[in-house]
Figure 1 (cartoon, rainbow, N blue to C red):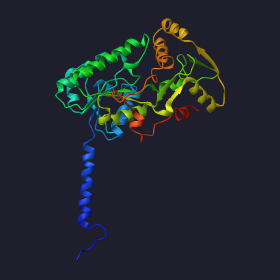
Figure 2 (figure 1 turned 60 degrees about the horizontal axis):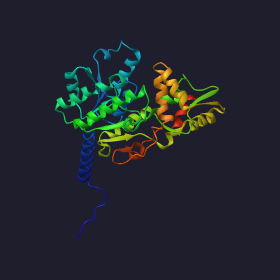
Figure 3 (figure 1 turned 90 degrees about the vertical axis):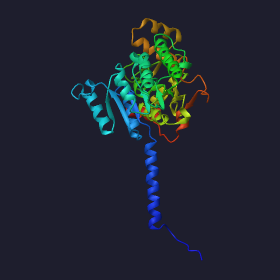
Figure 4 (figure 1 turned 30 degrees about the vertical axis):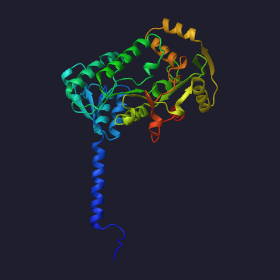
Length: 339
């Protein structure tokens, strides 16, 4: 005679609980330990907090003097945020090989978010990874702009992007597993002026548009850049690939962007279109950093470097397709912050 048991016995429930606990432990163990170099920079802080938020043991490389709370109120607040999120501050110096090696030895993934003046020195990170003897699963060099291998930038931006290309080749030659992140325009930086090179705020009466205004660019919220970047570090689909962050709702031409803002404020602006010839002249005649701004807008709104190629599986993947569960902030939603 067979006995039919309805529901779980106490022993079965205990076994099930232990199984669930082991699954949770395995899930936690699977989260890579992440080191962020340039952690207090513009995009670095977003990646640090995204890493902690997604359950990764997170380490931020900081100079010992930079960690002193009385140096800078804004930075002190950032360190407080890091501490509250469970981030470990690792004292070290980008230019101190021994401290860099010590930091690398503690982690599985290294993300660099250093600024433009330190881009070429990322070979020091490559050297530290190689000398550490650590089994680094992934290195993400500082990119977070357009795809530098498929760009048409003019000077003075071209030289800066050429350095990123050189670092890409150095990473590939090193044999270190990598992911390159092409996140395009940061929303907080570019939408705050409605993508105008010389503006200091949103328009009140007229808008300056480079080219014909019909070339599409991509704008991504900085927290979303952090989220997509962190999601990629343990994903085999992004191994030795470019991760493109191009959420469909955030791909707009300058004309579309202006029209969206006009609808929100209930006002029509005078539109002043600047030809490519005039833009190139402004780049040549303007001092830094204005020349950099014009050259950056030129590559996006005239050359179309954000959107003028198809992403092929051989070299890249698109973040919003890869992680459809991420509820990214659309340009439409982002502009509501300014109302």
